[in-house]
Length: 308
Ligand SMILES: [Zn+2]
Image (cartoon, rainbow, N blue to C red):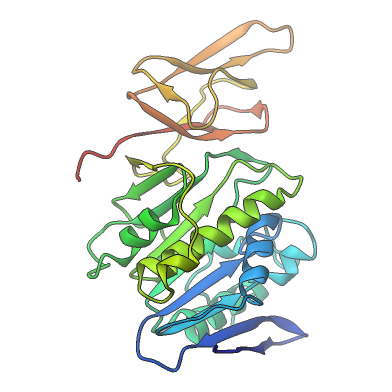
């Protein structure tokens, strides 16, 4: 059975990341798994570390795991870097002469992602957003082999979210083929979800012929396929009033066109504004924190993916 090797990619001032590599010594794909791109999302880190120590009978290609991609943020328990305030997942492809997070993105871009066939970036929704258990992939024509779609399907999450456009700066946007995961985990680490992520990665490796199918557990239930722009920085529905945002739906819930998704209330409880769905679809993103000001993005709905 192939054995893992672990090495350190060093950056100035003791920064950098560990790279774990399992080489089948047979031709095939190079698949990269990231945990901890956002430092406050722990389940992906647990799953990636479990993967990097697992006895896997890799049949082809190379599996590479960076178990904690953004160490400065992880060890500070924050989404962004305490060194420069940057969000690594908005910093690609980085800059070798830039800030610490820009240097990190550049090192990941040039030393890990360049030439890789598929990235699996293990995120969770964290404390600011509420997102159902899903895998997302970009479908803008660059992924000629359709590896992102195959991987997203194989992972086995509740939703498969197709994005027709590519948002700038994302870890994913650095790759022709990539998937990311999300799950509704606001903070207390959920070890069961780390196991789900681990199993999902094994299913992707089996789908790509890198593991025997018997090594990958069956998915818990069929996935629902949805589509939207889905850039959480700009594609969600905004509020027009300041106040407290009150959820009227849950993550993953099916909603009708015109259905009230949430309200903005004042401190006496008076309703200042209702946010209604533009579409029939499923709630894929909700702002978790209640305080809002005009223009804040609070809820996203994706529609059924009929291009199948
Ligand atoms: Zn994240």
